[in-house]
Amino acid sequence: MEIISEIEFKNPELFFLLIFPILHALWFFIGKKNTENLVYFSNVKLFHNKKNFKEKIVNLPYILKLISMCFIIISLCRPQTKNSWIENKTEGIDIIIALDVSGSMLAQDLNPSRLEASKKIAIDFIKDRINDRIGIVVFSGESFTQCPITSDKTSLINLFNDIQYGLVDDGTAIGEGLGNSINRLINSEAKSKVVILLTDGENNKGKISPLTAAEIAASDSVQVKVYTIGVGSKGMAKSPVAIDPSTNKFIYDYVEVKIDEKTLTDIAEMTGGQYFRATDNNSLKEIYSEINDLETTKLDSIIFNTKNEEFWKFSLIALFLYILSFVLKISYFKKIS
Image (cartoon, rainbow, N blue to C red; front, side, top):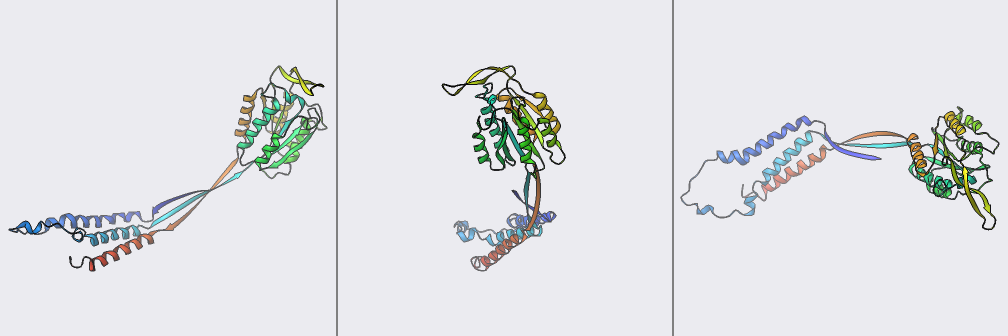
């Protein structure tokens, strides 16, 4: 909430009255001296004595009375304090990131691998979505929910870091991953619901076809927008092909990259989303940045205004100065006057 304070005057036209105390002061200090009669003395030594402090400030009561008059005029102008504050109401988006964790995601055409690059860049995306609720679905030969929809970004990021190959049976069940993601959003009350589905292959497992899941997402009762990302370089990529039994580590070789771009494009078009192809780390960052710009959080600003009368403060100052002027004149400066 942003608060802005400013002073304004109800009757600013009355400021012209300040000319009267100004003119009176000019007459008192300049004109009055010029109109006084001149008196000649034969011996001016009598006037060479320096003035004491009281004589130097002899005009103080008059000055105080003059300032008092100025404050009265300011009071007549009706000063008011105007306080304005803005309340921002954000309408967040519910997002599910559906991530392929099949063995092919260990391919090293992204640095250090497709899976690790996808995790890191998705985490950066999560950090930017301050007002949104986000969940994680992972899929391979089957699908499960790694993290339900939440606004707890710390827990979400920790669970994202825990994702690794081998969480589920190998394979690529795109339909299962999309279907599970839709199921996580089906009871969401958010006005905008989005799935970001990232995969590097072709649908080869699962009981639900990707296009059937897309039809459900596009239905009037669900209305989930799906952005699909095909990740992997074009041509050949260094990918795991077997496990060395002696070391229990993957053996890598160059394998042709096969991504079902047509299906991914159809899913995106059916649901009002968009298909992207990420061939390296930079292009994947740019894709998430573009999605971030496409799915902006709605911000409603309500402006409230209040006005407080401040004339009484100036009136009190004027009264105090006038009383002080009067007291000084009848006491401290009595003998001089």
